[in-house]
Amino acid sequence: NSDETNYRPNFHFTPKNNWMNDPNGLFYADGIYHLYFQYWPYGNTWGPMHWGHATSKDLVKWEEQPIALYPDRFGYIFSGSAAYDAQNTSGFGENGQAPAVAIFTYHDPVKEKEGKIDVESQGLAYSLDKGQTWTKYDQGNPVIKNPGVHDFRDPKVNRDWVNNRWILVIAAQDRAQFYTTDNLKDWEYLSDFGVGIGAHGGVWECPDFFPLKVKGTNEVKWVLIQSLNPGGANGGSGTQYFIGDFDGTNFTLDKTFAQKLDREKAVWIDYGRDNYAGVTWGGTPDKEYKRYFIGWMSNWDYANVVPTQTWRGTNTTVRELELVKDGNGYRLNTVPIKNLQNYITKTDVEKKISVKQNTVLIPEGKTDLTQAEISLTLKNLKKETYTLMLSNTDGDELHFGFNNASGEFFIDRSKSSNSTSFHKFTAAVSKAKLPGIKKKVKLRFLLDKTSIEIFYNDGEMAFTEIFYTKSPFTSLSIEGGQKFDVENLTVNQLNFN
Ligand code: FRU
Image (cartoon, rainbow, N blue to C red; front, side, top):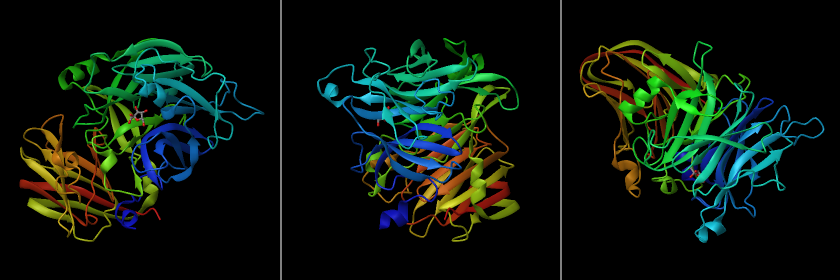
């Protein structure tokens, strides 16, 4: 059907059928990466939540698995996380088989209807076959009771390798709360963070909290990832982050990061409109020192009405988060997963193109732009606007680039989508303040049938947006007012068959 040919992504995960939102339960064991997800198996809009499941060997290609968790008497299965408990700290292991442990939110629709406050509590399930099938911890659930806050959800467990125990972060309406345990069952409340700090245009959801080494050093900082909806960088859903220190009880902002927050109000994992509820894998073969991130490539402003029918919901490409320190302090760089390289079938490089006002970078039909990775360096830039334009012969266009006078990045998808039924989707141009006026800018972007993921200057900033064109984009051009240079234009054709 037309859904499949027009819109089913080539390399971004989607369920075969029906509705998906947040990624959940990310864990790694024995060569397999697990991805669970908020899933409504009986329809293509949001409904009573289950956990769907998919697995991958390389974080690029995914294979869907049977549903992992079904609602029960405590309620729907909302977002949550999982850990591979290799040391059997939980005691759920049997016959030498280490358990995987999942911690998730129970959302009780009955209490909700009755107008109660304590609608959400945290449940636990364990798996003795490395994540294929799960047993709910009936004797102990809920393992974290509702403290009297209506929005109390999305627990994310991580190994705290600094203090050698487990750490959990959960969203409690307008703050993140931290808990710790040695056995994954008996959770002790530590502290909270966030009241009056960062963006608060909506309820806080789906946090993640982990130690990370500063790239190229042995220095450790703590990162808090915090989604919220609405109130995102460009409206609707968005994901911010914080960098600081953790003394075992309290998380405090790094001084330079606090100054950055004073200036910018919020620092975002992604400045586009379609990267939400993202969380990370830890405990991968690289031990705890690397963090791989995946988000839901949509936005609650329009997620239920995007024009696919068979399924609805797509994930971002997996990205590595790098903690980088420079003269301005700390930040997270976002870099597409290296394994994408293994899917390159052809590379075209142009060392230098001198542009006078505008030029075609990829002529009509030369590259399959529904599975491609493109990078380029713009040089000799002036204080004017530089626009890249994807187009096809059906009149669809996607514009993105930056105004180098005002120092602003933009994505304009107003002409990109074969739909007038979801106004909020096409209406606005997404914008983000850039770190300053530049002589030189590097851009790298990944293209699939319905998405673009742009990485600015080695991942200093990311911009992810979806679109629904009448037919695929077939050419790429660039425009700037005066003379400038494009160097190292690299067009990687990818193939996932
Ligand atoms: C975020 C979210 C979570 C919740 C889940 C329900 O998108 O609202 O806070 O657990 O979706 O599906």
